[in-house]
Image 1 (tube, rainbow, N blue to C red):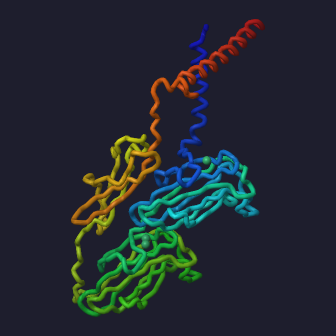
Image 2: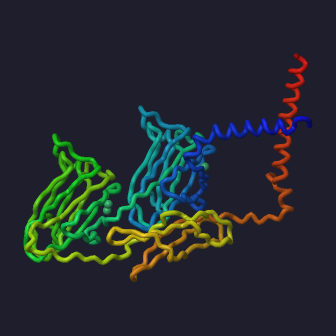
Image 3: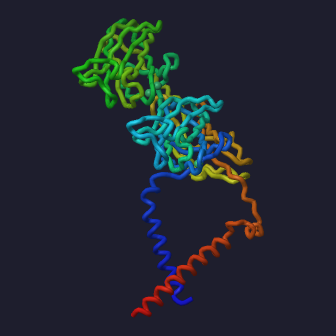
Length: 421
Ligand SMILES: [Ca+2]
Ligand SMILES: [Ca+2]
Ligand SMILES: [Ca+2]
């Protein structure tokens, strides 16, 4: 065994170099293994992360699931085909590409997509809060035998302004409101109450970064729109941002009355995501505006950072170390809180479990949720290892064999070279 250690170090160097060469591509995405059925669907633990998986045999069907946030949010599901069969750009036919289906808990299909000519597919929709959804991935029927890798990324965008008049978000007069349209199709409803005399109010509406109709083609379908309603749901004003991306209009309103503001994207650009600003103001300083209500109440909580440990073995205790919980308030402020409670989880059996987080302040309780994975216990006594096909000893033997093989080859080469010299 002469020079054995030198040979090992050469081989190790080769192995390290090979590993480094591979990392740049794979470091960007996280590998995930899918389940084969809805019941064994693999939980997608985090939003905004690129997960890579594979269809590794003919007619394989991959299942994933995810739990939505406790807040109102839009979800974008992005699907990319790395090296599976794919329809050509000139013949967009889904039968030749991988398909992705989204289901609710009752297996009602909500959306689907396939990877088109650019090898990607996606959709955007609002989902119920704190709810489990399922994703199924399989090849189109003309390429059922194709095997290869794909990427799936789920992103969430909070929509903190209600979508209905009944739940509208109360705003103050003479105050700049900045908010966003967050998905397909978002509607934001606000309400305000007028001051103590009948008067004219000025509404100023600004489009920050949403699509906008061009000045030469004035069409409200391509801009964000603002509508105003009275309490009888009669439209009392309607406008949209123009070429300079803003608009101002005046409207006469009755004293001490509640009015509603609806902001939404024109039908030609539904689903656009971006920010807007508006102000409802009165110039009449003689008529004092109703004093602002300044009560700050807890409006939601979120898990900003998941605990460091989200993979468990059956029977382990929950460990929330590293978890960051944020409380959000009605005035738009937020704070990290620590006196929350966790409940509702079950780590006593394999599978996934939803962990609920609750936090109370000022008589208001809000909840959030995240999921953990519980793996089957690997309760093996040391004796079992010798029977297992992948025991530590057998791995050592395997590598030892490889090292001896390479050492033999190197010895032959050295012998050959020295005989030529
Ligand atoms: Ca698979
Ligand atoms: Ca919104
Ligand atoms: Ca909304």
